[in-house]
Length: 114
Length: 110
Image (cartoon, rainbow over all chains, first blue to last red; front, side):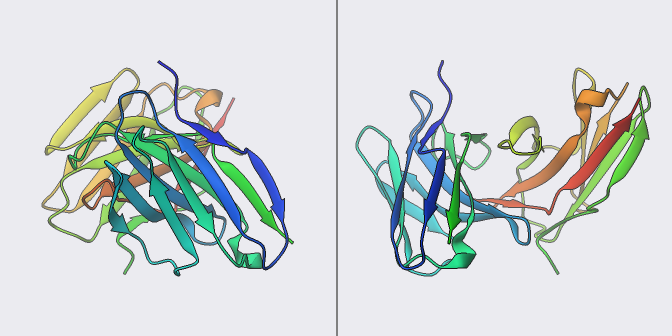
């Protein structure tokens, strides 16, 4: 079974631009979560989608948004990029909504904002 | 107080020894706990999940959970140089939201 895929893998943007990242979960998985990883803050939860509905959101500004499509693929968007948005953005997929279910991470998208 | 706390290390262990990694959490109602391994420049990879008090073994890895003490640990037996990585402890806060500790950097010395 193929794992979680994320595109693009690397991205360079300038301040003020916007960016869209894509995630395809493991086949059959319906939950997709997004995380930001930086050296200073570690891994932080952005939001989670299940069946096209956002069920949970982390403490990030409204510039960070996302959506999920009917095939469970998900996108996240960051508008008006700031230097501090430079990070590794990770997508994780899980089978469904239960708390004890395991999440599997994709390879990540490394975003550099100049 | 952080929700999930780990000693950032680095933790240095000789090859063949037991590596012990610890994690504490603040929410007494937490029910699901996970250990991930992350190599430099890579994404986190699941090692173990644990939900009940006690020990759970998988090969060279043993996860231990003590809900009364709000403590989770990971033991790696017969440590190998390939075990050198950052180990992340995570707690599920509901609706697939994982809260991570800062990670413990482990180095296995040949």
